[in-house]
Length: 187
Image (tube, rainbow, N blue to C red; front, top):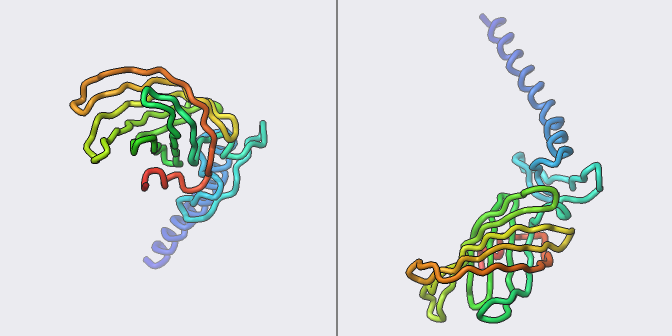
């Protein structure tokens, strides 16, 4: 009986070693083919810091290919010109901070080589903090290193939820930070 227990335990241990030995190969193959990989400096599932991932074609780092970080642009709206800050994190979360205390959250996702899209619901408060309405932002973007160009639509709704306007727009954003993109959501 003890021999059967040891044989079974040895088999399980051998399978675990084989599985663990193949994980780095799978991660390398995934990163080399441009699929989702943990960005440099981020913690992996095991808690270890990762190295920068370069693509064989260009030698570009993850920050040149993914929009992770905090971005800013001067945007013109019917209410005037405002500084708009948007952050994108590695889990696909997008956060926005605009003029007049406007804030928003949503998601982003890659759509191709150096391209991505995002959808954000931006809330407009009055000076006393009561909701005045919201906008549903839907943008497609093309990234070039530390800048990206966004083009899309914003559907504006009043406090009662009635659709009042749709705006088409474009903006050029500049990355201002690659660290702590969640700070936009917390502030």
